Amino acid sequence: GRYGSAGAHYGSGVDGKSISVHDRCMQKLSWGCYASGKIRKGTDIIMGRLFGTDGVRGVANEELTPQLAMQLGQAGAYVLTRENAHKPTIMVGCDTRISGDMLANALMAGACSVGANAVYVGIVPTPAVAYLTRKYKVDAGVVISASHNSVEFNGIKFFDGNGYKLPDSLEDEIEALIKNGMQGVKFPTGAGVGKIKYRTDAREEYINHAMKAVNVDLRGMKIVLDCAEGASYYTSVETMKELGAEVVAIHNNPDGTNINANCGSTHMGELQARVVYEKANVGLAFDGDADRLMAVDELGNIVDGDQIMALVGNHMKQNGKLNKNTIVATIMSNLGFFLMGEKNGIKIEQTKVGDRYVLERMREIGASLGGEQSGHVIFLDENTTGDGLLSALHLLQVIVETGEPLSELKKIMEVMPQALVNAKVPTHKKEKYMDYPEIAEAIAALDKKFAGEGRVLIRPSGTEPLVRVMIEGKDQKMIDEEAKKLAELIQNIML
Image (tube, rainbow, N blue to C red; front, top):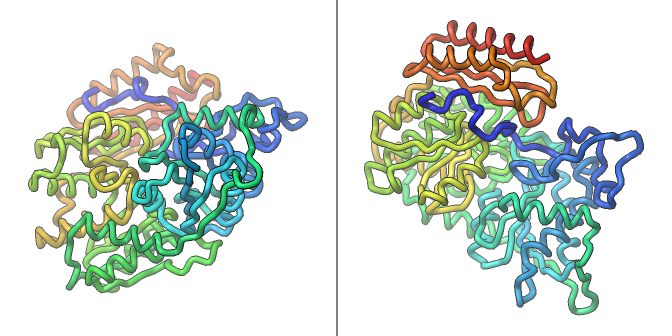
């Protein structure tokens, strides 16, 4: 289809969520046992990949254990720094989860055991680690975070020395080393062992970088910030205050256990109400590690990642700052976003779901803006990963420079109604739905029906025995009915 319908041609199995260590396909697999080549008795499971679309993620101290964190520190430090003639250094930061210190220290111990030094910058946003890794010219960066997930989860993701997430090939090397028990790796003794340095000033460096990157005067603006009890609790509040805004901060008192708890970019209700109550100009919501942003206009309506990219991208284009007049988005961006691009002379490049795939395409074509509907927005001229603070400042810059309220600015894009229905199918069949003629014909018929005024997107879930049916169009009732009908057809034929 014109806007990438059917989905069979795109990376199947990518689900928009990180594929975590606790995936169904892995059940009760012990990663500690996996590292030594053993599987628990009675667990007859084919091993899945350790790294998902956003690092390694699982329940802290159960699946993502200190032992696994140490092994990731050893293998990661070795793979990422083995070609260095000097003693390598890895920077480590974390979000506000109570398990962060436990896992960070285990990981740093592992890095030190293979001769690497570690710099611990404490609680900072994920994009801060990406930026600081480049600024301080260290050899790699690591973030201990599970992003928008609840407190029991945690994760470990690596950046290379240039601040980019690792390609699959390097993650595979790290995983292979762990699986093989670190064979071939020399563990130094004496002066060869690494050491840990603690820095508390790094977050100020990140704030300064953000303010220099986006020159905006926020005096006269009233902003409600939802910090998700996460890593933005200090950086976002201080930045907005320094730029002159009147700040009303909510969920900015993390205690280690309340991260993302009914707050932040995945729970917007309280922020919407607070913006209206405070008569604020805008509301801004971050997730736990502050690499994504969702906004609320002055009327209390949500403004998602697609809308943020649309209005910021158009402003950048008008000012000659949108490289190639192109924005990179995923196949799951709303149809209204693609129509906005056509109307405003902006080319929209599509990728599979996942900000890493957006970033890869941005680098390939030299794009300066890309992101996801969920609020991961990448400004590649300023940082190498999704950055909630930069996204917020760019959005505020458009409001200030145009003098228009966000409720008007967001009208550049009409959000098309969506219907999403899941079809339950056997796991081993979910990639093969297009092999069934009746299903292929039904998808083709719907493609034809919605051509020009909607789209059909079918994709297998990456984590569950499901095929997801998503239809966009102008008539909510019609797309709801068609999505339900197609999902039932897929389920009945494939079960």
